[in-house]
Image (cartoon, rainbow, N blue to C red; front, side, top):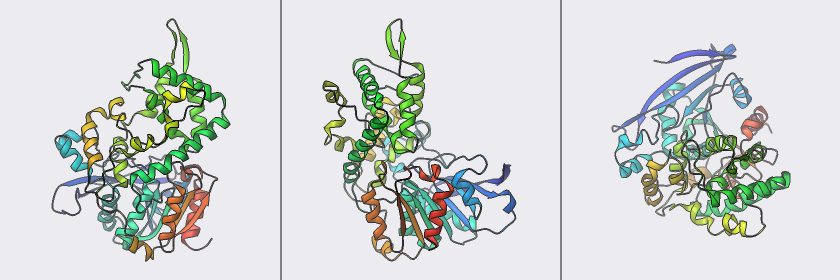
Length: 433
């Protein structure tokens, strides 16, 4: 039974749906999806078009808004909005170290998780759309990985869409994971260099922390083993609008003087474990590289293998000289499944997914070339998470898609830019700009 309730300026309704685990086997096992319907309080009795929001990730549950902030408030001016927890996230039959053993051993878990990619998410959307809209098409807004899902939507079921809006999420249609990461590491280095230009005092701070981690065994309060590689992965923050500033504030509180000498402060450790742990989004680590699998080649820990081609990211070699330490970002590595207590029980499952060779195509270039759905995308000029060249190549491959390329925002521009970003996308999709 649906339950409705109110927050300032908005009426919310909890919605639950049952869908097949494998849409190719509609009579087989099912899973539950959760979504939150939202409508502006002053429009609650009106017939409005629908907008479904697909969160970034993979593995990210839909935002839990209070009131009508940012882009969400702008969307509520015109739409009923459905905030979907994609399969395996949030309240949608969650997949984690706690729940996955219900599937059986690592092999069964890996087979199960192979159904948690963009194509399955699109099929989920199409399964629930008739129950939400009465069969009418809806507008999809896809952020980051949600944009990948939106391109898959245009490939698999464009008849379900009245418009497609993408923010920072135009994927390469045919790149292997290796291609994605070969393009990523130079972008990451540029972001690190820009951070140090803004905060030059962080050069020595980062080197000092790295040196400490190379010579000490540090275990954070939640049981996370803080290695130097784990510390470097905090560079994922540099892809967001405020990330450079937040990283700076983290580094400035790193050490305190104790009777045993200088140690990493409780303040630093508490913040670091919250940033590093995948307890709240284990699917991000488990299927991150699988979102690029489209052929018989395994992803095979692509980010880890490709990192070896960029020796400047080797912390030990960096500290021998006087070069700044390079952080990394949005890359998943096998050592994470040793360091993170939320991932340790899933190490073998992750290995099986990395070795998998039966991935199927996620995108249909011919169908995209014939696209008739109004579509618009914002492409961030030097997005750390999604390669701009890959994104623009895909934009040219989707008939009628209009782009706004900007360096005003980082990857989370739909949050920091809010209504302005959505206004621009609406105008582009409606051919008003």
